[in-house]
Image 1 (cartoon, rainbow, N blue to C red):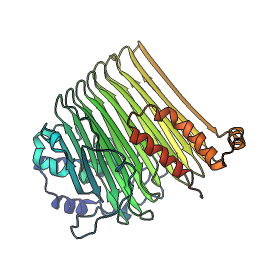
Image 2 (cartoon, helix red, strand yellow; image 1 turned 60 degrees about the vertical axis):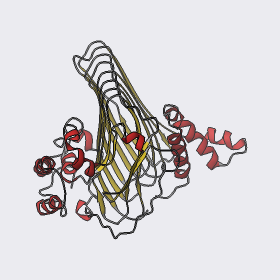
Image 3 (tube, rainbow, N blue to C red; image 1 turned 180 degrees about the horizontal axis):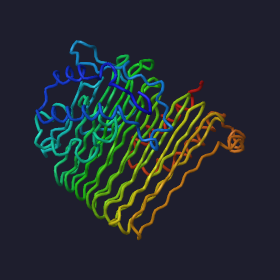
Length: 443
């Protein structure tokens, strides 16, 4: 699959494979029909070029999707041991674990379930509560028609995590979701759907991981965060695949009037990662804060395409990404603030800062604005620079080793993002992950 066009779906995802996949699913008819529509769109999209503005800096020439397969659930397979970043750092109201696209464990506190909260395996909950979920699943957030990756996901998604919180319900304890790959060549198409009705509040901490550091893997995922009026959501996703995994994701957050979304992303793993992230402020007074921490090493390529869309007046968005790069890694960030004509008196901000620890590392940061309203405050910024050797020398002259000095400087660089994250477990996890990354070398 190249950035231009391909003539047919790769083996394992062609029409016979899709029909076999569909036959093995126990799903409502409406979902099967949606999958068929998505697969038809996928076949059409394969013959179309990807958007060059989004993809021209992402090299897909070595990507071979035919090398990966969706694994069927195997009850006899031993449970994979996965090292997680967050699982043991907090008390959770619920946990769900997905291994190779299949749910292996799910739990929700009885007190939350008694209030009508749904949390766990998306596939199972669609069968049990399809009437509640049908209006939300890939209808308002991630659209299958966006490009070949969103259509590919919509046709083959393997379940995933659902969080549904009824109107007025507040979950004080966070929930935890783990998405992991364990078998070589496994493909994960998990979907995360979060629906908060009017006045609901919740926190979801989600992470991705690989059980085997040397096992090639593929993730084609999607995240939908749908907030009703005056809803409050804190969502964290820490991407920590091994460095032989390809990661593609479409992610969308939508906030109704007076809703508040705090969205934190961590880019730590993957061989190649590309995330298409949209935030839509649909109702008057809605606000979103988007935080990003990325640490790339070796030859990793991590790419973000972000858009903040103000579709209503008196809305606010604030995006802050921080990237650290070493060795021959590369990070790409293309950001856009779009303001619709009717969205007056809005405040939009975006900033990306990159710290280069190696002369061979590279960061491309491209902020942008599309403004159709005339009463707005929109600002953007991007910076990139190397570590000042005088700072390292100063720290070492005070008795620190070079490694400790680098950790202090990098930690200080990320501190502006850490200060915006209210969940202590997430701040500690990111800090520890950065310290481990500083010990990774080689090219």
